[in-house]
Length: 410
Image 1: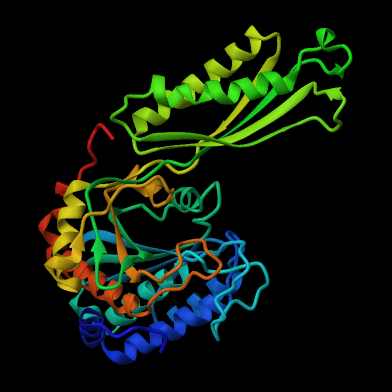
Image 2 (image 1 turned 90 degrees about the vertical axis):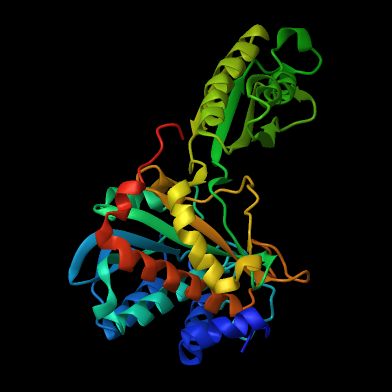
């Protein structure tokens, strides 16, 4: 087995049963070796649906590659949804693992294979104890978490959230030590927006610059001006960043370009800061270009919003985290500006997102061609979710969902 022995990990394996842990490793390895890009996870989805069929677990195809399985108890109550993302990344794998990707240029470099294996393990466990369930437990296998548009909006549009009172998910993190779970209320991941700016001037020969409006000069100066949006337009207590990733203009060394294209990204932890930057970026860009005799057109694409862990949902999940790794193993999740489309669900129902440690000091980071996980983390993540679902099931009929209303100011 591809895992490192540790007291916490061995305890988790004993808790979930070694046979189930071995099955999870096998599922994870199969998925790892057969990665698929977002919205094209056809073989992945067929594999998952075949397992659900074998276990006699009912499911619905919410989208072509999106699947929601459901286990209902005899007692009516609130519905909890557990989400696993299933897509891979356009990265050439360099791990050398015996179960490395068989598809050139595609790799599970973000742990989604592990997330799917954990939720499959959760279904496998509770499918054997259906009579213990109260309320309703849904298990979502979501496509395209890594794509710019995100798979979550399509899942929501398909009605998968109807009747759901809360959503929970885990993310395996190689930069977090195995045996720890990072969990905090409030903002934990950032919004992920993109902008494209087209600056149009008037091109001409370099021998007559006075007869032109140099799009390169305007665009280059605009890049510097854009940095003032964060430093002078956003409350300094609100985390935000704006970065220009590309600037393209011109084809010849002796021709003044008549147009230039700027592309970049905006990331924030605050919906308020996000709205400020989106509005100010358009006004600044158009005004700056006009002041230099040029015209600028802005296309602003809103990606996933900030991921905000709901306070009541996080408090509810904390005992399950302590049960999985002990009190000392539960640490605060330091917010950072990576994107996560679980945030879309958080705009509709309370969400809680936990990072499960799956590495050590020698591990490679997310999206690295040598990324891998300590598979012991599969058992730890499963134990956490078993405890979470069990607590939910025990209290589902007690009106818990009424305490999880979304705050008005997000």
